[in-house]
Image (cartoon, rainbow, N blue to C red; front, top):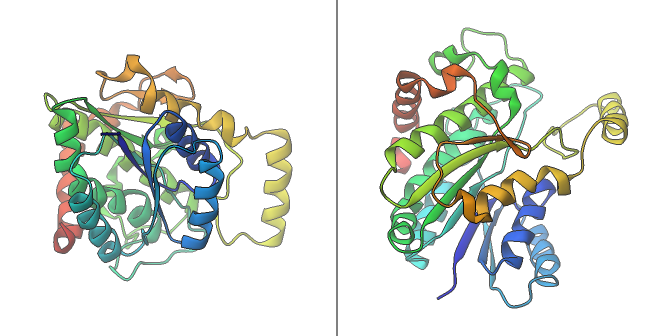
Length: 285
C-alpha cells in the first residue's frame, strides 16, 4: 500500500509547494480546504506533476471545530494508516473576532483546529508509526520569539487590547508548544513531531487588508519577502528527508536547526496549553 499524507492550507503559498513535493515523493494526498473549487484546481495542478498518486480534496472549515472534528473522524475511518500530517494552515485576523465556538479566530484556526484534527488522526498515525514511521510537521514562525507566554490565561483577549501581530505571535507560540509537547508524548510510538519557520514569505496570510496595507505589502513582497518555493523548503525537509525520520521536538529556522525561545520548552506551559485546549474543544474530541 502507498503512503498517505494530509495537509491543511495546501492550496496556496508554501502549502501548495509542499503538497506538490510530497505528492511527487509518492504519497497519496488529502488536501483539506475551505474552498473545494480551489482545491480541485490545485489537485489538477499537483497531478500534472505527480500523475500516479491519488489526491482527495476534502472541505474543512478550520474556524468551525464541528467541521474539523467531523473531517478528522471521517479521515480516521477512511485511512487506517497515515504516514504524514502537515498542520500548515494559518491566519492573522486584522480585527478582533470570535468563531462560532466562542474563541478568538487567530488562535482558533492556527492552534485549536489542528489540535482537534491531530487528536482524531493519532490512531492512524500511530499505526503507521509502528511500522514505517510517521511524521507530524507544524508550520510555526519566528514570531513565537515575540509572544507573551501568559497568553494562555487570556486567549480571548478579555484583559488585553487586541493587536493582530501579538495575536499571531501567541498563536505561533502555541504551535511550537504543541509540537514539542507531542514530541514528548509520542516518544516510542514511531511518530516524530517537528516545527519550522519558513522565512518571511510572500503569502496571503493577512486577510482583510486596507488598500494602503495591500500596497505596502505588495512592495515588501518585491524587495524583502522570499518566494513560497523557498519558504516551503523546511516543510519538505521535515516531511521527507530520511535524516529527520527519527528526530523529534526540533525547530527549523528556514533550513537551519535553531533553539526555540526557552518558554517554548517549558513543560508546565506545554501542559497548561494542552489542558486549556482540551477544555475549549472537549465537545469535539
